[in-house]
Image (cartoon, rainbow over all chains, first blue to last red; front, top):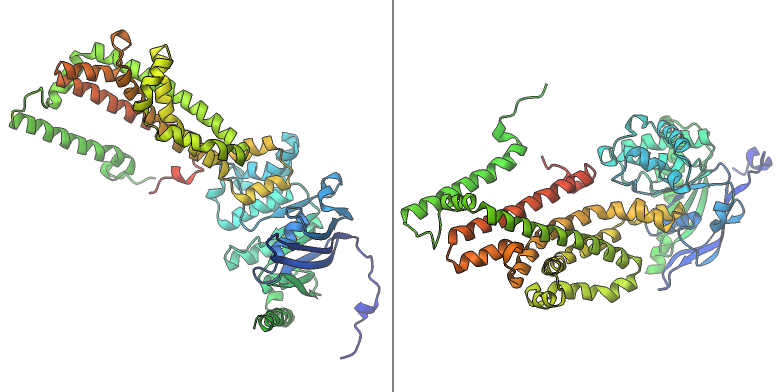
Length: 276
Length: 268
């Protein structure tokens, strides 16, 4: 089993520029709670990376620091080699999708999706054209005038994703976006997300606590553990895209899932020993 | 093809028919008791006599109603404008709210009857004095509800606005104000009734007679003259005004919130 895989020996064809660099970023709250121990992470342009771990492992904290919604208490985060706070000065854009759809209940689907364009002062005409495009992308073009409450949970989440895509971002940050949906809807949206990612050549950081979702979606899984929140291990999911539903019932899929599961147990076990 | 539902089973019809039925029964009992026990009209007039007096005395009563309505509407509008402005001031900073909110409470807990004589002395114009009194009564629910509403923003939605570098103004117009509307209208509904109560109380305290006399003065006068049927007729007009205001506010709420807010969805 010491055979070296040729893929490892071969130099990477075109080393993609890092879209996201996390340099010893950590988060300690003033009361001393360590939400996240220092993390070093580099995410290449076009990569689909999943942050996987139990609640309290700091995965959302890390994601929010990448988005600039939280300041690291130490360390730095770079997007396209610039500090996060300076993102708006360069041509690159990020979009954030929350766990809940976070739509404005008083506004139609169309107005909700148009919100980021309105806030940026994009002319109405251009904005409406882009909104129509984004809604078509998520298959909701027939619901443009509906109010959010008339839609199902999965459809509301699609609106939220359309709102993320309408600004034509390079980087899509998703914080357990499908966590509140039933499993069938979640699988469907996972598959749609992969399509969008490939079509739009996005870089995605996806937070989840589902091992299966992580294996199905990602190029790379960052395994995290709680108390204190930290990165434990990283796994490459070396499977070709497009990934079909068959992949989910394949032996490789189970092997990946098992490895992630073991890693998660090890991380939790280590914590228990410390606690005892 | 919609199925024809019997009128009595339609929720919309039920909302009208049921209370009307209760009213008819109560009025019938009232009329029956007055007739059977031969109660004199100076103690309890019958509903029939009350209506007859209302028609016969329509000129003074109608004029009085207009006066009371004017004070109610003016004070309600004044309270709404002042209340909203104060709320906007409060949400500008927690410090302002902390410093000023106790005084808003003070305003609320001080009985208007106790303050009204002072206001009537200070404000020369009697109508203006009564408007001030009634507005003071109606003010607090608007301040407290609107302030609560302006602060009740979904945290993630606010993060989203910040992430998209929304200006303070954009956040106010696109997020805070729409979020506050359901609370604001709740405040309006309470305050419209309070404005009427405030107007009647202010009239009682002011005791203004002559052409500028409102319904409260009609009640006082009728009391002195033991003209109890007229007193009842005036009371009826005040109650109906209150109901009308409430219905108007409910209708406005529906108009403004339309179908998006949970409170306006039918429970059927």
